[in-house]
Amino acid sequence: MNLREIATGGDPRKALATKFFQSKQAEAFLSIVAHRERRIMEAVVDLQEAADADIDVIEGVPSVDDRVEQIRSMALAMIDESLPEWYVQEAMDLENAEEAAQYADQTEEEWQETKETWADRYREQGIEGGVDELATAHVRTRFDVDDLETFRQAVVEWPNERQQAVLEEALAGGLEMAEQGIRDVTDAVDSENR
Image (tube, rainbow, N blue to C red; front, side, top):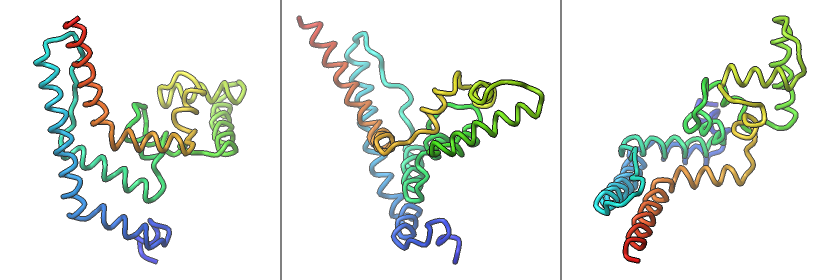
């Protein structure tokens, strides 16, 4: 078994999809999409600025190269079924995000074992407390997350609906931002005309 077969679990469809998203053809396709998205967002920014209204102008329009790489890496994460880990590393603002990603999409049993492991490490250092109390201390100090429930919801839990929402956000987020920007201008112009 070669490295590609290992990475794709021996599934020839996954291997083919991986090969495509790493190809020059995918680069060209994604570049066209990213260029079009960027032009739309820049046009909305121009519209917002020209409206001279009290609205928030879109900021941080990503470069074409950054957008191509984001879509490509997300697609590869989908193929190898690591979308939750990808999202935690790439899209969440966490301290030690790469480490936090290893806890993404855990089962309830795995999550309980993780909390117990963290608690045991603190106890080995002479710190006393319950499992959740010590696990909370861990997520605060290691990942800069206020509480255990927030960490669980943000990192650990990944139902299918959430994965779908992440895909939509990653693929259509720029266009949704542009659409909202147009609505903001329309609302501002409408209110001035009344």
